Length: 207
Image 1 (cartoon, rainbow, N blue to C red):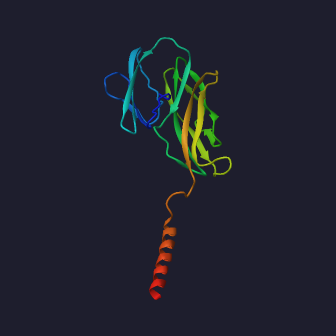
Image 2 (image 1 turned 180 degrees about the vertical axis):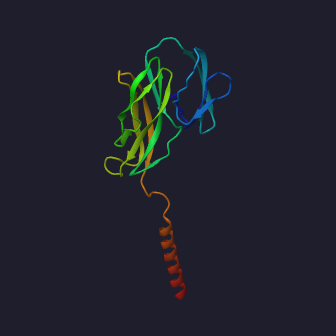
């Protein structure tokens, strides 16, 4: 659903009905997801999108599952949202990798774009069977802000690849970087301000 757009608002929720029963099975704040059917057949999938004005729209598509197909790896973000990063910090982010129509060996994560952040794969190479899904971890390290990295939204692009050269889709991950100490003043600073105000009031009374 990455092509979804809202010209007069912001899309806040993506809801998926995988079996056409009128009930939404999953909901996310990001436009991409992956679902596995364990039986061959034709399935009707409905996507409902909601924006910040509580306006919604739906789209329905039939999906054919089963039969022979080309070897395929699919990678997707393993969480619905990512908490902001402070400068000079690092954290792991989970992703999921799915394997279709073949058995993949030595599956690893390749970093396509890092936006001047340090992005490394934590999970070692893994073998995947046809229809199997596994969780992987990537580590994202944000340096101190400066000339090369500024505060704001950063874009990371990753891709799964196996030893035979089969590559997945390119998954885009957006993270927000904050300047350290840019929030509320600390307790000590508040005490210092209070002490100055008290001193000024005392001096005013002495006059």
